[in-house]
Image (cartoon, rainbow, N blue to C red; front, side, top):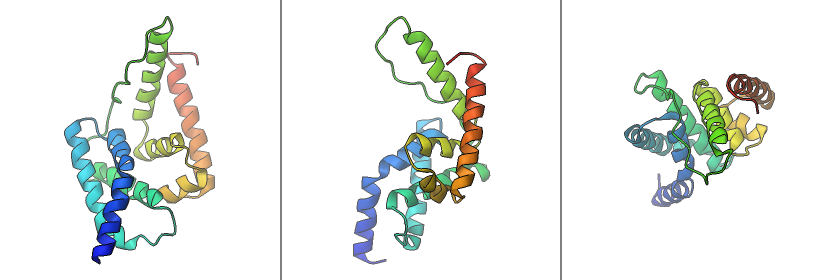
Length: 166
């Protein structure tokens, strides 16, 4: 790899490092585990950068590398998946604040209970990626994304409605 390629990779990685942070936060519970996964994702991105052809946006390619690395972490038995999501930040108090906070926590717990692939699907959906872009990142067809997304939405609705009416 040329010096110019190295500089471009470093610049692109810096511009899109929030993608790696989001994936790490979704799949790892502790700060130490998130840092380990961040390093592993960065290393894998560096190793596979030569395969980046530019057919998709760099951010789409990086999501794919990051998600595959995070999911691979579990398969190799290096880390255990998150059972509960991190707490949400405090918001101004009002009479409905407590109920809303409990509902949001229930939703995060339900998302935390999803499979690694379904978590990735939800994360990309919440990032406003199109079904086509999600399909590209996950390596499945847009129709499969739509089917999986409908199933995940139904599952999340069922899980959260056990405790709350939305």
